[in-house]
Amino acid sequence: MINKNNKYLGAALVTITVAGMVAAPQAMAKKAKKVQASTISEYHHSVTTTRSNTSAIEAQLRALEDEVASLKAQVKASAPTAAVVTADSQKIQELDAWAASVKAGHEKHEKHHEKENLLYFRGGYAGNDTAMGATTNTATLANGQVATLGTKGGTDGWNFGAGLDFHLNDNLFGLVDKTDLLGELDLNYVDLGSFTAGAVSGVANAARVPLSNTQQASQSMLRISASPKIKFLKGSAIRPWIIPVGFTLNVISPPSQANTITVLKPAMNFGAGLDYNVWKSLYIGADVRYFLATSQLDGTNVNGLTAGGLVGFGF
Image 1 (tube, one colour):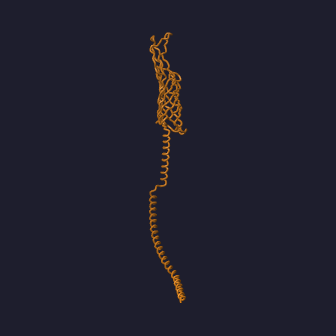
Image 2 (cartoon, one colour):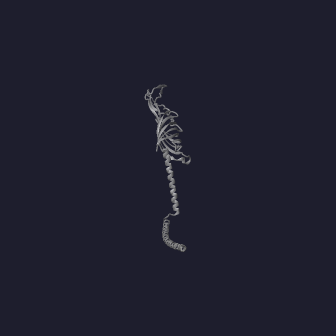
Image 3 (tube, one colour):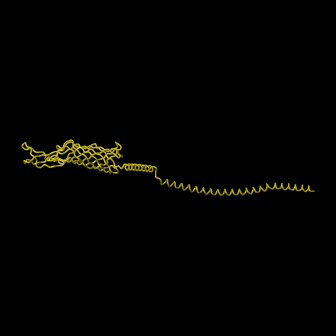
């Protein structure tokens, strides 16, 4: 009996197991179908949303393209021609180059504190080749006779003067680099000492008779000169210079002769020296000049030289 029940129980278990195995795939299939349907629905919804967004973006892009095209048309209509642009560009380049050159020149100028014009004062030794013939005075002798008598002045003395240097040209008209041409106006006073007027005794009846009206007089000369000056080493603190040749008007005092009263004698002048920029607009230097007249002034020789130092102020 028991064995028979066991057989029935085993058969039931086998039947349940087989039924479960058969039902499980069907349930899984139903579940898979539900998942697949849900996924397909979501996909369709996503595609629909994406298409809607894409249409909106495409509409925005078309609007932007239309706006860009409109702006290009406006710019093209208002833009200058190529020739005008080229001409304006050239003018701008020229202005930039000019501004750069001016700036460079200004910086260089400030760096060396150099001024192109100069007001100077000079002085020192003065000497003439020979003693100038002083004024011959009318002297009354002790015996009542009147004689024209006189002496000569000295050959050594001193000088003092002032002048202006005016800048005329850079680089000596393009011939020499760092070399300036200046025009100089110079006033110079020369003192050659004093002499005794009427100190020579007259001769009356072969006898020397002393004079009764002797007196002291100063021998002096004013030189007014206009000269070209060539100054080297532009941009340097020390600048040597030369005067190749200039014009000088000599004014002597006393006059050459009592009867002729001649005081003016033209001459040439030559010079050399150097200027040193001490600080900002302050200059010091050395100066040597020689003055040459081709003839004498009624027996008076005005040839001579001056040498000394100078102090100047640039402007």
